[in-house]
Amino acid sequence: MAYVLSQLLSESAAAHPGRLAIADADQELTYAAAADRVARLAGSLRSLGVRVGDRVALLAPKSASAIVAIHAIHRAGAAYVPLDPAAPPARLGYILGDCGVRVAMSGTAASLRPSGDILPPAAPLDAVVVLDGAASDAPSRLPARRIVGWDDALSHEPAPEDPGTIETDLAYILYTSGSTGEPKGVMISHRNALTFVDWAATTFGVRPEDRLSNHAPFHFDLSVFDIFAAARSGASVHPVPAGLNTFPLRLGQWIEQRRVTVWYSVPSALTLLALHGRLRDRDLSALRCVLFAGEVFPLKHLQALVAALPGPGFFNLYGPTETNVCTYYEVDRRELASRTTPVPIGRACANFGVFAVTAEGALVSAPGQIGELVVRGPGVALGYWGRPERTARSFVQNPLHDRYPEITYRTGDLVTPDERGDWVYLGRSDHQIKSRGYRIELGEIESALYAHPGVREAAVVAVPDDLIGNRIHAVVVPAPGGPGEAELQAFCAERLPRYMVPESVEFRSALPRTLNGKVDRVQLAAVPR
Amino acid sequence: MTGVEGRVAAFVREELLAPQGRAGEELGADTSLFRTGIVDSFGLLSLVTFLEQEYGISVRDEEMVPENFDSVATIAAFVARRSAGKGGAT
Image 1 (cartoon, each protein chain N blue to C red):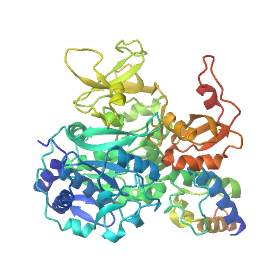
Image 2 (cartoon, rainbow over the protein chains, first blue to last red):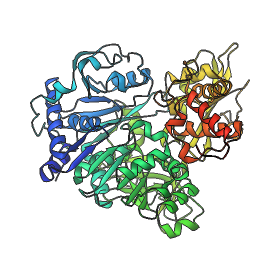
Image 3 (cartoon, one colour):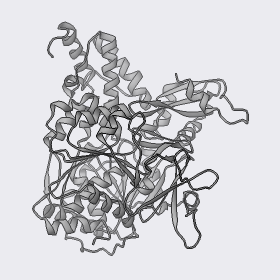
Image 4 (cartoon, rainbow over the protein chains, first blue to last red):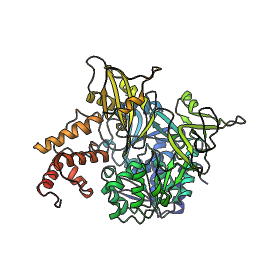
């Protein structure tokens, strides 16, 4: 039985060497070929000094080679830190410095856009391995003392099978929006990830014949299912090419041509497919499972999608990055048509426990009672990298007992059970929102706005949107001669990922306040431009 | 740029580039809107809505492809074709 993720690919390579493992438009790798590449790349990483416990960054668009790189980082004993190639250099530089990255695997300069500035901190990394390119193709934005081309790395002696990683070592760190202005790194151990992967591969019956799409970016934990449930099951994983996402029609054709059997994405991607993908014209008979997570699926769009696809089962997966997925709900086709509210988030996955606690500390036990969802089990993350105080606020002793140490995660998500005992998501207990499935702390956007010298006061509100969940609207009180809308948006874009830049900025002479002096967010959200 | 190109470019600049904080970026008639990440799937929909309202055409799902929407120039050519033979084939 595997106890670290790197064993999944090795075991499948031994059992199914000739089966397809990873495929994109440029290459199709069998398990034997993928395992050989992974071992050699890991050998190269080891020769560059990578050891158990190290963090290796991955800065690359989606491709078969990028997935090979993720496996190789594990095989070398390290945790991977996936970076969003579209995020501003300042944010990426912050992440590299925050978790002490010394070695990175990077796409070529040509594959990364924007070509961009050099990432701070200015101190060069120890080494960069270039994916699918020569050393001379390395992006200038990632300066390093040593640059290794792909072919050189692939001709290295294979790394030893077991680098000495154990299940409590870190498998990856995912950076999410932080309310105080800086992103925080969620630390996921091999044990955390395997708890989820084992449950998912079993529950959805993933087999060697399956063909899994990989739609979510690597810095979004939906991709963990695609990559590792495939590796565990001897199935193949098919990264969706970046440009294809834009065109629902082409994405539908791609699902047909690839004969995808298991699809997993945020609801907004599926909504676009349902609305504009002409799914009824496609032969999607191979598709047997459609999984979605990351945000509430607007009911009418889910109904349209399910009606357009008579074959597959549909599953709503729920969980913050700190637990990956912890509850799930299988959509009942017949019941769905008559529903008037979004589908529930369902019940706990195997080896996860969930319960809800009211603001007064009582256990929620009946429909109508509202509480914060608390998660327990081996899937609960280790905390936030280098932030013990922040970790201690959300990762707490089980509030139901003090007999022995048991860390649980307080999600901040408000839920209530329905009549059948399925959990229903109601909203947040704080200022976190979702847009396009990404989780966003409004406070982080406000911090970015306050950093501008021409901003006196700023408040950011979410305006609900049927297609993408929420649109971001900023209300700003400018100093005399302060910035205009476009300037503020450009200022934010240097600090925040694209999905966090306010779509509109409204200028006022003062922010509305409630009677006790707090910014009146209800009033702000009620009058979008 | 032609008249249609100018109006499409203005829309892309104000409604798509500016909200990404990229108002100052160069935008030529032949700049690829997708390879530069200016337009994503949601941007494509707002472009389509703009064209439908501005030029009284209706864009079918099968017409929402890179051949028609890759640049300001291809969009203007698409609008010209559709305006010439309204309701006709692409």
